[in-house]
Image 1 (cartoon, rainbow, N blue to C red):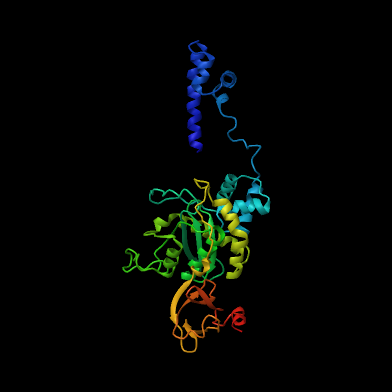
Image 2 (tube, rainbow, N blue to C red; image 1 turned 90 degrees about the vertical axis):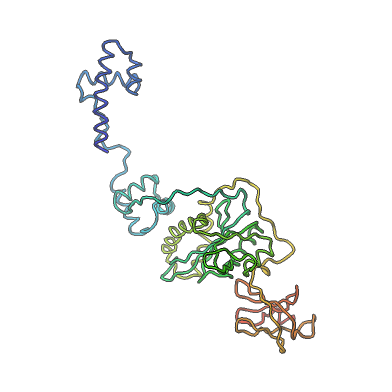
Length: 393
């Protein structure tokens, strides 16, 4: 940088000498000379006066080597660097800048903060790279397509768990996010229930080819569209198109979002000393998500929404695991190594040998349906819920 500046200054001096000589011999006017040098007429006359008094030395840029009166003191640069090292180590510069402004009264710009942390060695710049890819256009309207995916990571504490996220393709707004021990059918249903309850039915869902989403007869091959999983069956009942992704790049929007979450959320949970799943989910729901959506969601191309309000049915009875069972002679149903006792009712004297349907909800509660009618509700351990016992009595 210094060498380039010296070369530029030397060229400017030689160039001025030529232009001044042409000006003194009336071959150039003051306006023409200033235009060639790329400066104002006033500055050209100022340089001419300095040259007459001091020679070439008078042409040197007098700002070089002087400390700007607006420069931030070195002590403050060290203080910001110390704050990062002591409390926010691991945060990205942008994330640290937001926290420093929000909680520590940082007054300087993001660019100054980035340069300060780099110069003091608190952070090391990384070079971006990778293949050139074409960006897939977003859907034009909210609710046209949603993504659902999960990422296993050490989000808090020492143990890894899954973060399941559902987000809108048109805006990148996260409509549902929560931690669970391991993603699966119930976690997928939970994300869909939270999304539909908050916004309504949507047009299509874009997911990977995990076994809880699709049956894939051949590893890495096409999905079997005629063999539906529980998630596929529920989406078909709701009229939602299920789209399978065939490469990580195809899920680039959700992959980039997880990169942002791993960069920010892990550090925030560590800063809050959160080490259990219940507290992490509470922080995610009550603090983080609103701030994340406000910062990273974008405006949809079309203002209107493709979300449709749910009316006339309970979506929770579709977005759940459903399995057919035959009632035993003692009016019980076997499910997941449990015996679910069907309470007596006015509908039938008994249900022996009747075909019923067990619903397993995302919160692990259960229900038994005979046709469209629910005839029993159960806690996760298989015990009958109190309201069902009252109805039976």
